[in-house]
Amino acid sequence: MENNVEQILESCISDGNRKSFFLFAGAGSGKTYTLVRLLNKIKEKWESKLSSEGKHVAVITYTNAATDEIISRLDYSQLFHISTIHSFIWDVIKPYQLDIRKYYISFKEEELGEVMAKLEKAKKKEGKTYESNLQKSKELKSKIEKAKAIERFIYNPNGNNFEFNALSHADVIKLAARMITENQLLQELIAQQYPFLLIDESQDTKSDLVDAFFEIERNFQDIFTIGLLGDQKQRIYTDGKENIVGIIPENWEKPVKIMNYRCSKRIVKLANSIGKSIDKYAEQNHRQDASEGLVRLFLVEDKDGLDKTQVENVIGNKMAELTGEAEWKLDKNGVKILALEHMMAARRLGFAEFFDAMRKSDKYGQTLLQGLVDDMDVFTKLSFPLIAHIKSGDNVSALNLLKRYSPLINSLPEKDAFHVFDKCIENVRLLVDLFEQNVSIREFVSFVFSSHLFEVPKLLVQASEMSMEQLNVEDKDELIYNWVQVMNLPISQISIFDNYVNRKTMFDTHQGVKGLEFDRVLVILDDKESNGFLFSYDKLLGVKPLSDTDQKNIDSGKDSSLERTTRLFYVICTRAKKSLAVVMYTSNPEAAKSKAISNGWFDDDEIELL
Image (tube, rainbow, N blue to C red; front, top):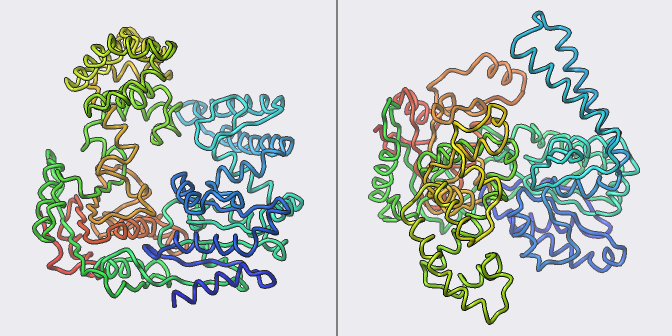
């Protein structure tokens, strides 16, 4: 059956028989392997022709990490244009600046019209809602006027885009979808430049863009082939195509990969029982040589003052006994722990106060959780690596870091650098001592600045010299306010935060691990702590009833919180290769147990009430 899939895909990209396709590839099915194999087949069959014509094969991936992975697997071949969706569509539309401006102004005028209508209908010309809409109308009018004078719009797929002529991430998606859909010439240019367009994780691709790509395929299917790879069960974002399975044209190929190469037998069984309520392609087979595996559901009554870290350590110890694997003990770092929100991880790891202050800054919105905040480089790219080099005895790397970035050394001739290094090594050791003493961020910044080990951003220097009492009210919307807030926190909070965003801790989020896999997974379900509204594990496991809105959405075929949560639960359970522990904090453990059993997800002896 799996060999048949490979044959179907190869036929779809063969000259004279090209055909668009949707590959249904569930969790652990080897989707990336199949994608790379297909791309190599395209290279084998088409590289000579496409390269001579200056054309490329476009591959849209879900994350920058996935992009890098596929690029390396293809030996950095120039035939392929591999990027995230935002990068790809910006490359497509950025030459058409006049059209961008026209559509941008049109969209902002539409938004302004909606806001003005709300202001006119408002019964009271006062209050927070009215004031908010009034402020929004002023901002939109300002954006429209500024846009009329912009000659060139810019955009950074990985940045915050605060420049006056910068487009937001949402703007780029909306602009591209409309420009492609309404401009057949642009469709033709895309079809000619990228005769093959393959989209990984297609179920989470922006809905409007999916429609736009389908439009190109309808109009230019003789020269343009789309390949979608995905799994409806793993759609976790609300702006993805709700029913992408239902809109696939009849003439497309629809191969299905039914083998789960990743998970143990018990986890595949769990995944199948969760997935069958999502779509008809849910059923997977496990490998014949797969381990038996183990799953457990721990239900904890959520009470005030409950030490959840202690509870999770107890569960880790229980899993170590059940599996015979000491790696389940949480002090062994052999478990991936999944929480719904970053703050849940921050509380458990000990950087909650720092994270809470930084996430409130709009200017760090896009880059904070990517670990790309320039203001933090003095810590994360300079001081912390220097400390690590010294502690490990790697003085050569320490010297090289200082030679490149320290104002004490980087301008000196080679013969003088070693001499000065000997002189400043005492300051370096003092820096290590301060870090090990876990001094305040204020004290750490002050020392780095006064010792001239590294350049310190002016913002941090100013913040280190101020107290909250010295701030003006108008500073509240500025970065200085956020940094002054954290100056008395221990330096370890920045270090732990840096490790977290770079995936060097045991923790990650439910949404953040899609596509990843781990031997042992501990899933935390806690609606109260996550404090969200898009997902509800209490509803999923029968602790809370569905809302009227949920039932209305279900009856009308629209997405509901129940379906979103089911899909997310499927994703997180299928990250585990060998064993899985699910801990749910809830007001009614008995109700959750009854639902878990009636759903066929867990047996009675696989559930423990704590």
